[in-house]
Length: 105
Image (cartoon, rainbow, N blue to C red; front, side, top):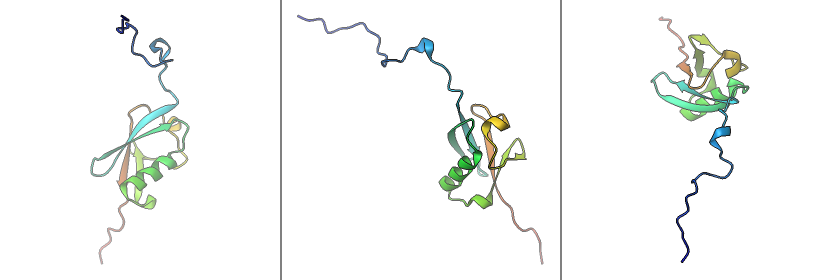
């Protein structure tokens, strides 16, 4: 009779935990909407944030011109990157709806 109980570790081939390096090329960023809803994005630290902004507007059904994106109260531009802003894993970007008007007649 053959012994079918093997004592090998159930680990994927090539998945050596000793050599596992943290992924420093990508960062998880959350975008917090005006209603405090969160949308998570995983992007490269060198990716222009215009891609994130476009994806956020697409997911939430908003137009790109009606949303302003802020980090620590400062407006960010489409050419900014997570690296240029010093964003780290789990940091948040605030998405605010542009307020138009305010003038009474």
